Length: 315
Image (cartoon, rainbow, N blue to C red; front, side, top):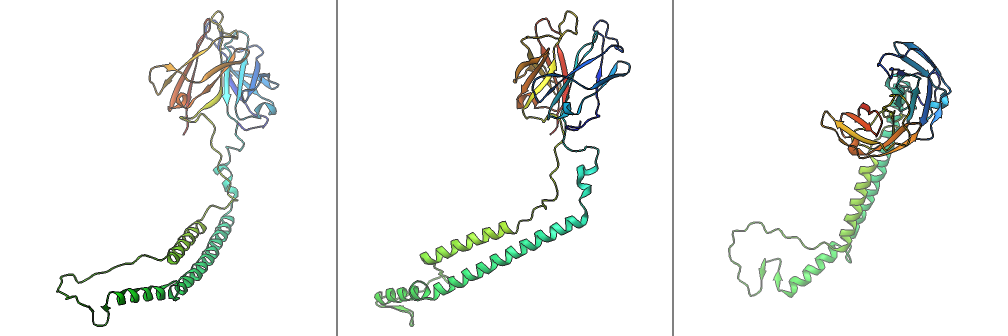
């Protein structure tokens, strides 16, 4: 069903309260509840289509909600509630409207995104180049760089009487060794570490800047209607009728719920059940109440017929 759109149809099956036959005559009254609000009397039109099937064309305002429950009451027939979840888009339109986005529009958006990413990358690389140049300058200066390191090493070697030219240490006799590679690494000075942190941050920015996303002109798809598996579902409505005649609305009842998930045995539902009005009740289902592909709900109360509803969930 479309949201806030006129000239749509909801169908009910009228079943006799006495012998289960089709009810084909009478004047139905249809009530509606929008998003769990106060129940109102429908202003639309009803017609018998044949074999007990009745069609109801609701007024446009009666479809203006995310969840609408229509309840048909007909003398001599079991009351029936139909739950619908109206959508804002036209489900009959192929690709949910994406056919209106031309290839030229997509190409233009992609070209713009690629160009912006390339410009951002070039600017970031220029910044990296500037920073690297600065590091090279810092390393070569005599106060805080390689020059300073060399001066400090020369001073320590002189103190230890190490002759770097002759490869000897005073008063020490060198012996043969099997070690042919004695790579050593000193402690990085603070300036070098700071520049490395700057480079790391710039590289992270480049990775973010070059990420490509879909153009904003392509609208996000709207999820289909229905109960989502393993997710809460509020204001799920259902009718209760008296056992005495099988059609009179049962009001002010304490209703309990059970469920059979994917063919398993019935267990109690978890959600809170409350009366809306005129024998229509609602349950705020928890995620555990919807955690299955095919679920049958059974609602019971004293002096009332059981109401049984089966649903197929979606992902």
